[in-house]
Length: 219
Image 1 (cartoon, rainbow, N blue to C red):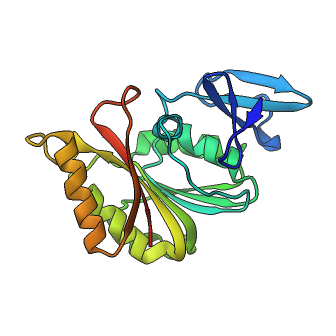
Image 2: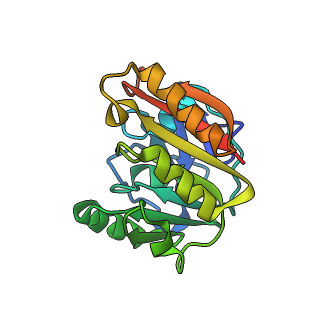
């Protein structure tokens, strides 16, 4: 198992892994493979189940620390969240999700992962969780709504610290089915730049996800 340039992410051949946190030893989240080496457990990170894994394998590079605090919008059932939990062992992940079905699974995930805080709320209204969420180092979003860029910008203005970073999973077909994905990505980048966000990189998620890209920004 070899370390990568991203803290807490490991690679073995063509697969990437995170080290399972001690509170969750032996526990699988989505039937991922667990590899044991030198009293440590490494969980395989499936790029077909996690867009962040797909983005990393396609070349996304970003700085993250063991004590980073993260606001995660669109947490779903917690597949990607669980790997971020492995990476940010000493940090806190504030996870926002508005699906009751997904939230039940997310809450169950938190039983073995004390660094995850589940928030049952609509990310369109960032003021509604201001009493729970602190200023964060990283804002991550994976929401399939037409106004997903607006949601991202509003939450960044409310919660991302001045030298923080944003990771935005853009779902092109959710924004405008009449446009080619690249045209949608360009529109989103323009909107982000108008709100004084710097575009560090834009990476397509093919072959793992069709019509999806990650936009990596900083203030």
